[in-house]
Every structure is written in C-alpha cells, then in structure tokens.
Length: 107
Image 1 (cartoon, one colour):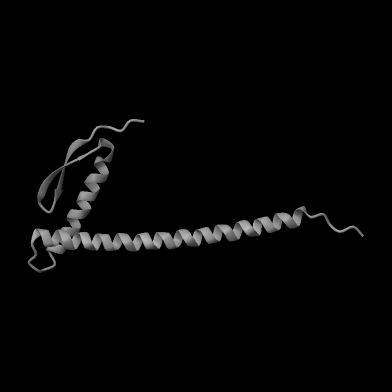
Image 2 (cartoon, one colour; image 1 turned 45 degrees about the horizontal axis):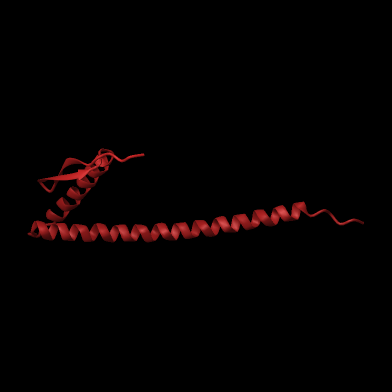
C-alpha cells in the first residue's frame, strides 16, 4: 500500500501558528499532539514565573520526555510480568497435559 503525499497542516501552539507537513492520515494525531503540547506549555507559562517561549518549550519538552520514559519503563515491567505469567501458565498446562496422557499403572 502506497502512503499518501505529505500535506501542509496548520497547528497552533502557545498562540502561534505553525505549518507542519504530514500525511493526511496523520493529521488528526498531529492536531491532538499540538493541542496537548500547547496545553502543557500554557501550564508552564501560567506558573507565575516570567519565562521566555524557548524556556517554556524546553521545560515542557523535558517534562513530557520524563513522563514518556517513566511510562515506557512501566510498560516494559508489565510486559516482563506478563511474559512470566504466560510461561508459568504454559508450564502448568504442559504438566497437566502430560499427567493426563500417562496411562494408569496396570495392577
């Protein structure tokens, strides 16, 4: 399947408009990402301290990156626990199946 050609999409971040190119099927995700980023930057801006737009962007990016890394670590831990559970269940099933297929002793 061929991907669509990128198109210019306008996003608004912290009262500024930016033109960003993306494939049409990515426009919704791009708009949602821009809205989320703008909200987070607005939170940093309204913190009461006078910060430049660059400082607001850097602080917001660091906070989002930190949250992302924490979530990624949690996901990896959950995947490892799930893999252990699956292995344990598969072992129990194999053990149970082996016991059932063993014929009873002859008297």
